[in-house]
Length: 316
Image (tube, rainbow, N blue to C red; front, side, top):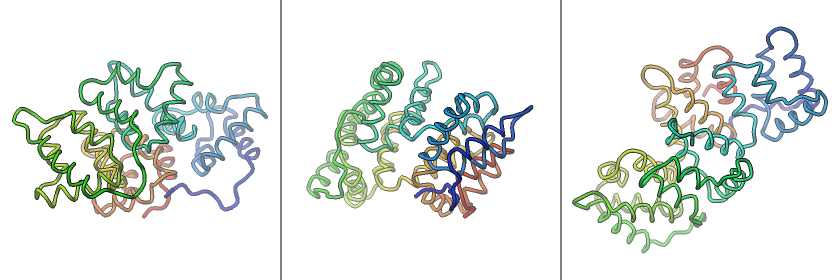
């Protein structure tokens, strides 16, 4: 459920392109106009505005935004412009960058997307960069985290609602012995189950594990795994049951303590604004007794704040 407020009567892409062109004129740009237009248009509408802008003014709108905007606002607006799959591809490429590899971002994109989305992401990644996503993961990730990401990318999972209760119980037993090894967990088994099973199956597995062993599966994983591998397993598990809570928690983390993790904050707000932000906001309020709107308002300033709050929509 999206949160972006689209006006009831949307101006034509040509009128929007004119407004943006005029906002760029003169010394410095009228940032509030740019936000007013772009933060209140859907992905399809933004693409049409870009086309109009290029046709009418022989100029690349994204390059113009890159030149005119600054800091976190620039980062957020430029991430907002592409359509969702192309955006995911650029996040992944940026995250897979040698010494500065952002494992959290890679895990978040790969382990929270559907099988059909991942197939598109792989295709566009290859078409854009001339190298496969798997190749870059092979180079930049390591150990079990790498093995899990590659398996998750290349396994065709059932995505329907039906589950096989016998199989769920068998998996619960298998996982119990996989995380109860004396010398560390049986990671191969963990990877196989977590990358092969449907979200519905994993959600059922979570409650079956709890009733069979009086322990949370997530807790068992935390006890026996660590680092990026643990984070990826927990991401898959949490998103099988309640993706909105997963993202609410990630947003809370990005704003907790001293300083804000603006990269994570921008990434999550931008990628979820047109997907399920209303649910994330409800989850945030329920868990943390504070609205996400107020949390973002407290942690950001200026036009950057205005832009993110526009994507969040209503204050509730």
